[in-house]
Length: 251
Image (cartoon, rainbow, N blue to C red; front, top):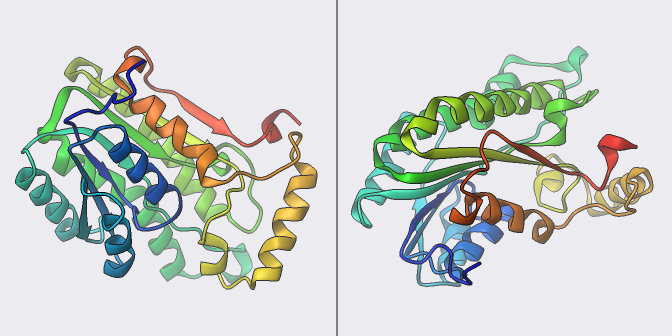
């Protein structure tokens, strides 16, 4: 396999300011991409990523909105005019016990995790090359019971469904569609839900005891699977949801 599999390609990574998105964007840039358009709602975090590699193009945009999707499409047109890889990483988790559920939380989670990928894919589809690739970042919650997080789980089940349906729909256009479904990953998502650092570490310590391989994931455990699924060498891989949970599914 080439050490520069994305040479001269244009890549879009949503939610590219932190965590998995940031890691994936930089991995694509280091693998030869000419332009890696990273999106997010916090300009300062995107600027930090852009400062790390000249191929990174920051676009401040909420891709759960039509205006945000239009902004990303405009950036692609301004940087070569066509798209090789689209990575849907933007996502949000909110604790949502049913007895305390409110409409605003439901809409936020569904808009970002499910509506956003639909809107953005629709906008960018005319720009996707043949062959092209879409990779969605989902979660094992999409196929496992998630007490207290049912709305998030439902949104990720929807992502699983999009992956398989789009794989069938877009195959005639030469576009492959796959997803990764991590379990626990060390990102800022837990702090964003109000957990103190010691609570986050306690959660990870407990989770590690449940994981057959004995630890939770880092972003570097997930990124290689995103790039591998997008790699042209994976030309026959489509419609797959790859679970990265240390064996929880089989425990």
